[in-house]
Length: 499
Ligand code: MN
Image (cartoon, rainbow, N blue to C red):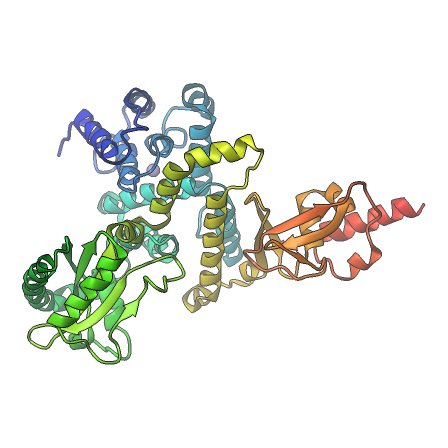
């Protein structure tokens, strides 16, 4: 299939116009596009498509997640150094530091080969990836947009490589995407990887589920008509999406001991989602659903609007009897919550960027550079680290000792420090800078004054309060510090000041 490259590029521009017309600089993006085409001239993908189409599809994925122009430019350029004929200097000269930083961040993350020869290598590599990602959320979003297109074109890749790539997607990228709250993207990655990693199981669930999908579809369409009428009777403007459960998550559920391939036990093989403008309309819609269909006792309503999930997910879920006494799930949320649920951190990032531009300038003018968004992101990352170190599946596959014996802590600016577990604010001070140790007066952990011997935990934000002049470190510190760096520096400073 030959597609006109220019027409495809036009589609990208139209997409951006749809959400970010203000920032859209067509001339700039055309220049980026031209540069990318030149850098990849003559190169083809395994599909036979011009290589540059992969850069373009990556950028389109980023535009679907409503990201800013610099990130989209980085998407268009993410392979020009690694696989094309351009250098980092070329990108700096043409497009500036910010875009270059994003592109080289993506290259760094891509060069981390997750599956090393030895288990320790895998763990070490995963750690490197965390640190590279923590510097800028947008780096990982470009990497994910890239991975998504690579998965969409996986059928062209040599067979012996397919399984490895798909497995890495299922085990590393999909859980990461889930932690970022990007539910739709996670489901898409899962379903793309599923047939390559578990081919027989994929065929089985595909075949067995067909008839159940069909039946569910009929019930749902009926409910949709009824609910739309009732909602409009109450003057509630609503949209109702119907959806099928994704194949991979259906399979996971069917395999559960309590379900054991009994489709009657799957309540969300098809579901309805009611979208409204405001939170109070959500609750009004909930009332209407319960008037029309009887609530299933005991498993009924979950209100994630009043109590959002840890990754920020908000929605009301209710499980009711549909016509024909089949159990079915209805979700109710606002359009804003919906965007957040589908694109998670990406949506959050795009939104807070747009909203806080003015505020940020003002803070910068006052010399304050605390970047709240960045902190939110690194916290998410720490959460994810906890999940994978807790996850049995992972622990079975690799020995996660090394990773679980490390903690990530943050400076108030959001810089990440990787320390052994048991590290204290003093270890942190010496990790930031060996000279800082002499100035330690006290320390704050998560904005509260804390003992200098406190054992830090992953995700802590640590701040060293400096005294006016350098002091001799306390010899007591040697009793509790754990890093070699702190031990050596303290001993050295004590010796020097003793003589
Ligand atoms: Mn790529």
